[in-house]
Image: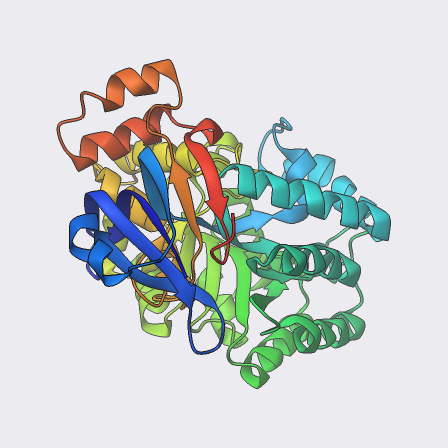
Length: 427
């Protein structure tokens, strides 16, 4: 058992932040041997309960849950900052050529190191990530994640049509490979598998049907895909599925809308789609830096609040422009103010932070497991320095309340704020 003394940031059931200026975080094994949070609260109230436990002090620092990235593309790390006219040209010109390189196993292994180092540097301790259509891309990422003790969820991309040579897979073999990967990786340590149709236009009906059958056969695996990101993409889906009520409903027809199903973007949807997400338990991965960069549109936070469905924040690297959760939270704040309706929504800093931690955990169906510092949660947390840069130090020392403190870090922060990362209680 070990303890850490610093300010603490955690979240209540309603998403409100709980801040303890002088806190104690106690970490130790549970009955299964996992390192979990045993206690978190005021130092004065807890210190006497743990005599003899070594305490590591972080003066002037904040201990917070590790960030959760709800949608990111491991193979697109080198695609960040590639200019294009929009989503579909960007895929053709940059993304597919980069993903084709993952046919080489050694390249996949090398990129797994780079990708996980970037997550760690930015304080991200769990991610839901796309791999490529090559099964060994999943092996490369999850082998290295296992070595590092990470909670990581990943899946081989399914794309058996409208895709170039080098990334297009074969329908039946892609489903055989997916099931083999589920059996090899899902539930192994802290790892999970996600059935991963790239998006409806890239998958034949036979492939989507097979994916839905696998989802029914393995109800505790995740599902991840894209929906309603770009208007050209939506027109394409309408041509391919003229009888579908909406782009989102296509996935429902194949049994791919349920708990633990995460759909990136969900920009151009209506209230019927929002209700479909809510009623099926599926969630939206909001990807504001990607949506701004590719000119895709604005996630409608007012609609999400009105109808009420699960959502959380995501970098969407490499359409997204940064691994930094601070950059993502700031972009979400700007997107919400713009919105699809006027006036937009002014998101509280506490809510932005919740979307990247406890809210993202809720979207994944891992509420109470990750994304918080409450007792029983796995001990994934980060030490933040609110004075990491001169300008940030000037701003945070004058913060009048928690929202001002958090917002200062959101607006002015980057990876320099993340002083140390703990995974499973280990630095």
